[in-house]
Image (cartoon, rainbow over all chains, first blue to last red; front, side, top):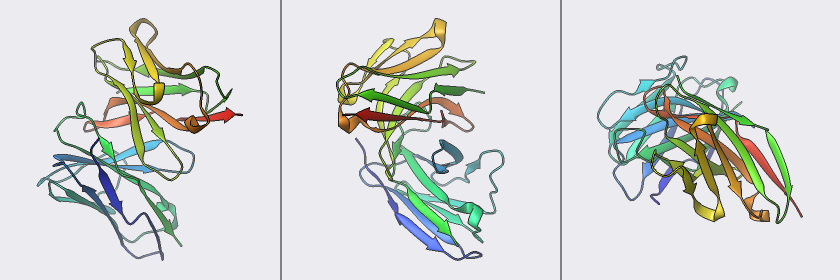
Length: 117
Length: 113
């Protein structure tokens, strides 16, 4: 299957700082990328959907000004957690799809564990 | 809105025994359904998917699932469990918001030696 990478795999930051997480599709062009959040021992919750060159579509309850998503190229999407707080600590997982519909298979990255002190 | 319910947050089976992980869905339209496996601190790997073709779907690692519309179910099975099957399993349906996946809460599969 297609390969999706995330960087960093884990990050620890101080409260109030911003953290950027990268999601890359290594061997295919990702028309659509999705960002999910997973709390310990819980399921994944969709945060936002981004299409290359367009503004991201955020799920209800997700603050767009806090979680900035940029999908500037067909192989890279970034999630920036601005002014991070301890409650933002979580496992963030991206997925990438070569199509514009969720009916196209999504390939998941390994995740980024964020800890905010 | 679409949703999935996974019965049993933890399932424990003996090595060599049948694995059965339950998933029921709710959907106003014909669903696309998926089973993913997640190993500790890793992303998700697709086991299999139902896309309205054959109702019995075969996936990787010996897993299969049967789509039953009358029961709104998509249970995952494997005839003989292996120690390497120990992981978290998620059932998912297309339709969360802007085409993202909606996941069930997950089932932690424990394999007893």
